[in-house]
Length: 354
Ligand code: EPU
Image 1 (cartoon, rainbow, N blue to C red):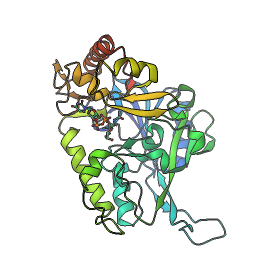
Image 2 (image 1 turned 90 degrees about the horizontal axis):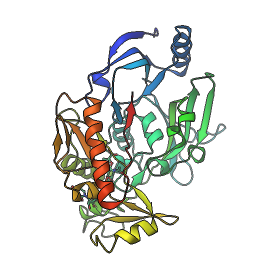
Image 3 (image 1 turned 60 degrees about the vertical axis):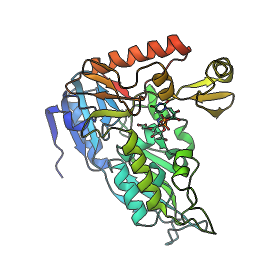
């Protein structure tokens, strides 16, 4: 496929917040070779400002992008042989490794995995975005995190065009975090992610609200439901709480749940006995951003064309025609208010692009 570099390219279809902005240049690549060719061509045109995007479901464009937007269209799915000398794909422990192109839609991959009898990703059903972004952000929901599935991440260094393979450990995963979020690592453009999945289904019902939906169905030696049932319930739960970006522009959780040192929690706990909190290990406690925003009275509030979603206040929405500045004005007002009331500073999860 011939490499096409588009100019003055509309990004409306490439960001779920629905920002009507443009990129000076836009390239979609279908292979690592095409990516390297694109990087060379962009360099020869003097373009040194690059932004690699996936499904655009975690981005807030604050303005037109003066540089080149790169988008992966690498979408292959291949089961990896257990070892080079071995034709078997399933390991003795029943696991198998699947290498997926970074441009593959994440949820389509989850659906495909279930059709093939590969388990472990079902709790992460319905998350928007692509495979590449899943590995940057350590996507997590309903008791699962991608870090528990990632085996390795392949990337091209956009400065040197060299390939580098990161083990899961090297990715430095933590809650909604990885080394790929650090400014010095933005140069790595992810091309493939390899996940380890299981050929036997073991339900993960560690998330209480999900477990409640299966109450009474765990009897006997085997659960009386399958991974497809988990997927259906997770998608239903998401639909009850989260706005559909095709209808109301948004980028999912706009804020991260704040992780605070235990003494900060110990000081707040007697004042707010109902405050949700989760042990985050190593002397830290994770608080609920949704609860803090809700308690501060922001749920369902609007500021011009920007709004706080009425069913999940962690999500900011574009009510129509909002600019990045409109969304940021609302976000900053919430951060200031929550900080004044609780002494806790919320951090934005969504990437602001200027
Ligand atoms: N809450 C309120 N008011 C509300 C909604 C929630 O007080 O209107 C409180 C409740 O006490 C609830 C708590 O907030 O127990 C947590 O809410 P929820 O279970 O919806 O999860 P969350 O912590 O707000 C996280 C992820 C979501 C993910 C859910 C489910 C982050 C930043 N967000 O939200 O991820 O779907 O857990 O696992 O960690 C996303 O990234 O786009 C996303 C939606």
